[in-house]
Image 1 (cartoon, rainbow, N blue to C red):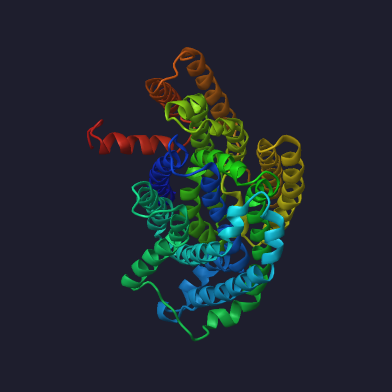
Image 2 (cartoon, rainbow, N blue to C red; image 1 turned 90 degrees about the vertical axis):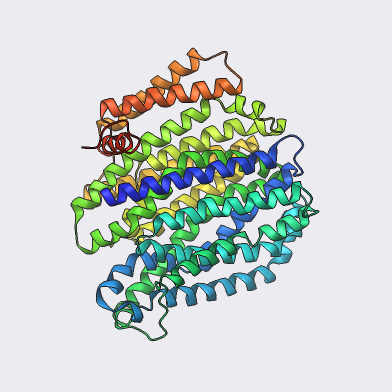
Amino acid sequence: MSQIRRQSIISTIFVYAGFAIGFINTYLFTRNGSPFTPSQYGLTGIFIAVGNLMFAFANMGMTSVMYKFYPYYNDNIPKKKNDLLTWGLFISTLGFILVLISGFVFKDVVVRKFSANSPEFVHYYFWIFPFGFSILLFSLFEVYAWNLKKSILTTFLREVLFRVLTTLLIFLLSFKLIHSFDAFIKLYSFTYGIVALVLFLYLLSRGELNVSFAISRVTKKFYKKIISFATLIYFGGLVYMIAQFIETLVIMSVIGTDGVGIFVLASVISGLVQAPQRGAIAASLPVLSRAWKDKDHAKINLIYQRSGINLLIVSLGVFLIIWLSYEDAVRVFHLKPDYLQSKWIFFFIGLAKIVDLGTGVNSQIIGTSIHWRFEFLSGVVLLTLAIPLNYFFVREFGIIGAAYAHLISFSVYNAIRIIFLKRKFNMQPFSTKTAYAIVLAFIVYTGCYYAFLSLHTFAGIVIKSLTFLAVYGGSVIYLDLSPDVLPVWKTIQTKTGMKRKV
């Protein structure tokens, strides 16, 4: 657990560093006087949404295969004969070629569907393809690096470097070093390619990039299981990814890219709530794969429970700190008035993130177990809910309807997974401390809200946030709500000199 804790903490630090840079980018995109319109800002969010959908269609389940079967390859054949990465790259590239062909074949359908409300998307349609292919390559190298215990590096590249490159492009346009949004978005389409290239060169320089063109005995032994696993996981991941980004597509179609820009702002900010999950997933996946192989159910249950309470504590804290000052932040930082509409969108999406994090790494536990077929079935349920709910709610309530749909569909999705793990393995992520954490968070929030009701300046935002953090964090430590909090606090005390080293 100490290894997972260490990697999760450092990865989370990088995630939040990335979000800090992302907020600078968001400010530069959305401030009064920005060279970007809400529609243009929305287009960057569309690139991310559609690029991830391309990855979901193209990867053919190989990212999941690589973390599920890596222990079998690693334990039974020499590194030089490990052909797992070779198959991952080959099959996923074939998948992307099919995506590219489909993109050409169905272009007229895309034009008819989106040209009226989202003409910018249609104009830059083909520039999304290099962006999507870059996400695919990076994701393959990322999973491979996770198995090599390099999750901290991959988190830095995905969360920090990508955003730094975006910042650079924003400044180039703002200072007229590039002269149009047209040039900006075309350069933006290659940013993930640079991130993927950096990871590729790192693995190559360390001698870890083993590409074998001979079919190994492990592949010969497990290929039927690999095909079966990849097929169901592929379709399960595909429906999950569509469900994740269906809001953007529906808003594009019904409202337009201006609406997407407002929704993207709320999604970016709600990403702060979800940030700790990324580090936890990267650190826990290889450990869970190994634990299932070794039939170590006790370790899996321990990871499940600790991830649940740890992620719940952090997500509640982050959500309520943001909610304390949401409107104040929009006004203090002089964002365009239209972006005030994002407040309640953030609220409902943020609640969905808390539900997702508070249920621990259930998806990763199921995906690395022998019951990985359930990954597909639960994904189908999610998609079956998400598509009609989004379409109905967006037409009925506007942009905020997508947030309603997101909360409902992901709450049901996680409930199904909790029930499955409880019935199948008698594992569940909750305890009495779960209830204590929720009650504590809202008591501290209520106290801070009424204590600082008249503070609406930048100083007010800082005071409210620090007060909430101090009271909430101190109470979590005092009440010992998580077995991982106290060791981390003692490490901080030692490293910062607050406590003498023994």
